[in-house]
Image (cartoon, rainbow, N blue to C red; front, side):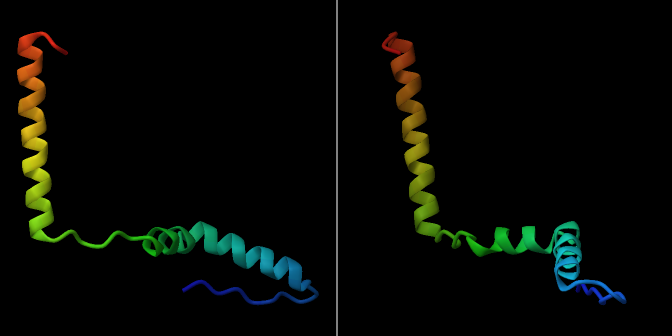
Length: 70
């Protein structure tokens, strides 16, 4: 948790600047932005279908290379 106390005679603008600088240095903002758009977990069926598709695509590309079409 980041905290900033107001110094004597310090303007609110400077206090806000110090606070925002502390937040940036701590990495809290970076972590929050990273978690904001986190992808959902992919289900097993979708993973399996994707793996099958990749394998088929790979074999097709190898076959075309052997034939000299790529």
